[in-house]
Amino acid sequence: MDERRIVSAGSLQQIEMVSKYSALRDRLRTSGHPQVRMSFDEITNLLPGGLPPSAYRHDAWWSNEDAPESTHSQSRLGWMAAGYTAAADRTTRQVVFTRIAN
Image (cartoon, rainbow, N blue to C red; front, side, top):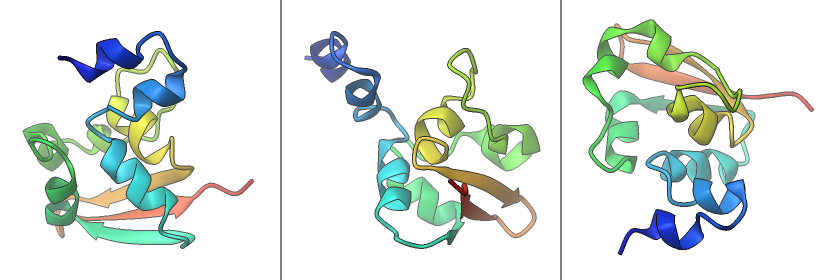
């Protein structure tokens, strides 16, 4: 049974709970730190199926977009949903997530 169908009648927050990026979102939310540095390997280990090849090839994959119409679900449902922005260095394969000031 597809979990997304079970919760689709619920709120957006419930739908987020079953997104591919929910583990990353939850890791950031519970970190308690204003900045969190993670390697691509660490992020890959959190995500079902790992990071897509485009995350290794394109800076745009790491764009900080949270508009509902954005096609970048990784930012919208991942780090932006946790209240962070991402700055990736594809050369070192590191990402620094920085909490958005309230």
